[in-house]
Length: 330
Ligand SMILES: Nc1nc2c(c(=O)[nH]1)N[C@H]1C(S)=C(S)[C@@H](COP(=O)(O)O)O[C@H]1N2
Ligand SMILES: [Mo]
Image 1 (cartoon, rainbow, N blue to C red):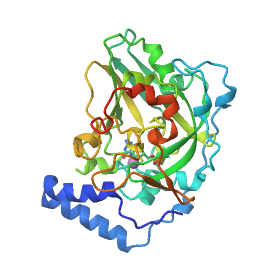
Image 2: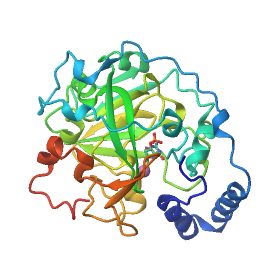
Image 3: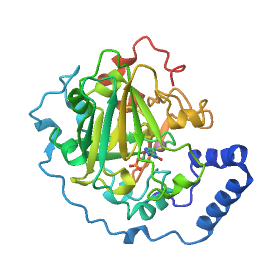
Image 4: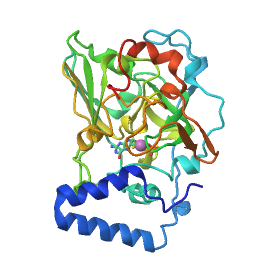
């Protein structure tokens, strides 16, 4: 089990930001909340019942009958045989600031979140913009099991068996125009259901973005399950993004809007701290965060290991960045 009272680098930053930007009241409230959590017993996350339906028709990646949409024919990057993080740790050690800035506080805070019915609007520079009901969206392609490493910018990592399909399958449906160079993503904004959206700790809604070729890469998936079960609320139900060669914060949760654009879209963390979090956010052990090293990582439940360039997916994705200065485009 990860330590429960650790102050994460991201929330350390946020405490400073509260004082600087959001004024004394917010800062006091945040500090009080923080102290409260710190000196009272944490909620018993083990007692949170998680009875989730199975993902229907799940197939494993290497048995997939559908060919990848682009570039790589080699599907070896789709699974790793490294030991998988337990379902318990994946669903109780979370970053989801709409619910809590405490990793073990997300699961209890998100427990009652209702993610059905749900719609996802796919708009912008495409021939067939459309609002998808979740049930239709999930039928666009059969879910595959993708066992990916996930490396958070805070230097912890997991190995997670996701269920999902390549984002390219959805984008193909709306027929992107050649002028679409970027894809912007947005999380649900509903402060009644996402209590921390009443606070100023980040600018809501959470937004993220990818370059079009990154979005179309077969490793980039829309995930709707973990370990063959529907995605729990704390992991981004009902649908979230996973880009395994990038830091975890690019994997935006509970998506309601996907917009095709000509210009690079703003992203929540690079807007909050442009010197610390870039648009690309490719995992890179040679480019340190201004406040800590990125050379190693703490694999939850499995000790410290070296961090790999592009999180070990160099063979699959390095070509996307040829000729780019990875230090500048961090
Ligand atoms: N909407 C939203 N998406 C989010 C976040 C968030 O706070 N809000 N946190 C990000 C960060 S920093 C990480 S590391 C991953 C964590 O995913 P997990 O909790 O499923 O492990 O989600 C990312 N997606
Ligand atoms: Mo993260």
